[in-house]
Length: 110
Length: 114
Image (cartoon, rainbow over all chains, first blue to last red; front, side, top):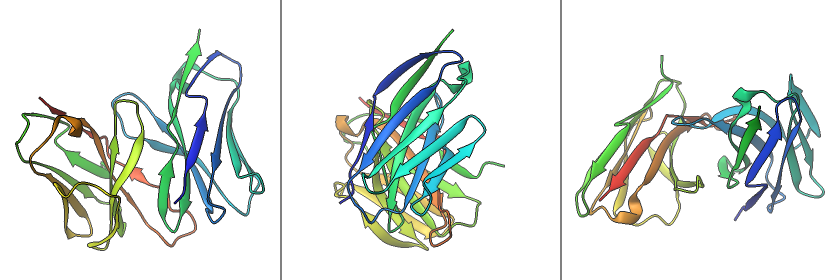
């Protein structure tokens, strides 16, 4: 079955700097890659997603890149702000089954 | 209006008891899920129902029994609770088959078994 690896598990960046979270997946048939943000006491919320026929997607300060050949995908957050502090999950979807990475706890330092 | 709502938000109970968690979605989605999030934040799929039919069952002990009375509801019943069942349980829904089918999560039920 699909396996999603996510790194790092914890990331601390200075406010205003960029943060990058990387994921790999195992099943080349996966075709949809969402990213979720989970704040304390809440459920994960979709922040951006990318399909396998696209290499890059951007939404304001957030961008995702996908390398299908290497089975890598990454989340980039620029100009980080205190409200970006949360746990971020990458995921890969095959046949409508979404498998999550183990999460990255992002700390934005003042 | 809350899109995916689950109750209760907190559940504290003793080992051996039976408990239920309810979930409702008003998004009109055909598919609903239960995920378990352990203390390390790892999200693991447990079950998936499409239009009241079970489509995913991820080697979950048979003490866990999902029930879907209609496509807007997916409840989770747990028998003979064990310490290791302590976790946050998330209900989610999606509309498969469309161009983008992200999951919409509820805010979770924190289950503590003592």
